[in-house]
Amino acid sequence: MRIGELSEKSGVSVATIKYYLREGLLPAGELSRPNQASYDDGHVERLRYIRALIDIGKLPITQVREVLAMVHSPSPNIHDALGTALQASVTVRGTASPEAQKEIDELVVRRKWQVSPNAPGRRAAAEVITALRQLGADDLVDLLDEYAKAVERIARLDLRFVRERSSPEAMVNGAVIGTLLGDSLIAALRRLADEHVSAEAFQT
Amino acid sequence: MRIGELSEKSGVSVATIKYYLREGLLPAGELSRPNQASYDDGHVERLRYIRALIDIGKLPITQVREVLAMVHSPSPNIHDALGTALQASVTVRGTASPEAQKEIDELVVRRKWQVSPNAPGRRAAAEVITALRQLGADDLVDLLDEYAKAVERIARLDLRFVRERSSPEAMVNGAVIGTLLGDSLIAALRRLADEHVSAEAFQT
Image (cartoon, rainbow over all chains, first blue to last red; front, side):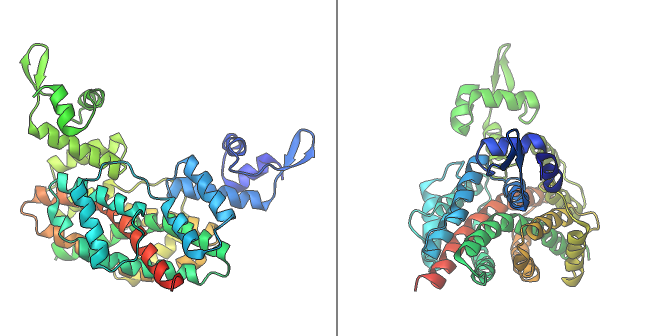
């Protein structure tokens, strides 16, 4: 198909498609004539994938490029490959106090979690704890272990669906989608569940 | 204190502070001399709050303004006030298919969740389901009810900490912080827990 049809099928504008082509996120089409490239369903799929990472996963373009590279040549060790998939999506933006970092490291030990010492999730969690303490929400930090327990249940679901996939590539791909889109799904479901428990508590 | 000290104490640059003043996010300082405003600890706190909403909650400035307005004059009905707090943080960006919308609406009925028909979380969840189906991750959607169950546990923790706060203002404030920073905390803990369950599954 030509670029106009690719745009229509994928819902991505021609200008944006051209940008992704220039940035190397989307492989070039086959040249059917000197001035005209032809695209296939693989391009439609790839565009949907990119848009999901950007719109729902909220990844910047540079990280989209990393994720695509990784999904297309996953490490032969599946745990390592999944680890790279997880880490691609952790953005570190604020500051983490040494105390908060220690709180998270101790939580990991208490929960007996096998997590590498330099996992970016440690730092990301410590940043949130730092902000919560600065905002005086120590009462929320008090529930940290309870939140960790609830999240562990979610992680077991994450693993269940990744494990059942047929190939290492499909597993890594699933880990990327599950990690990024999963955050948004969990956040949206949490809004609904929060409204429900609030209704139960305050409206009877 | 003068603006330079306010900047040092809050970690926010003078230029950004001036921007927040112009945008009305930060109340003006008291004029100590015709050309010199004086700020207090309330300004430091407010700046930390704004930065947390932006850096960790990833809210755009316009939503920060809405949240601040709401926290400072919460509705007298606590359930309504909490509802507004929850809804401020749901951003709708993609498209939701009618089928996906129906799946979420049916999930709400199955879980016996009391959720208003126009809750933005319904739409946000349907968008993620739409994207997951487009990406061929139907195997993840199959686990929707399990995820909803796990998230309900998290919601009960959310409520516990909001409930224990002393005033309606403190509760609404807690709901905002807990909702926005909570998403980031859950995402970060999820990375750690995912690494752990992957290590358990693939590294023994």
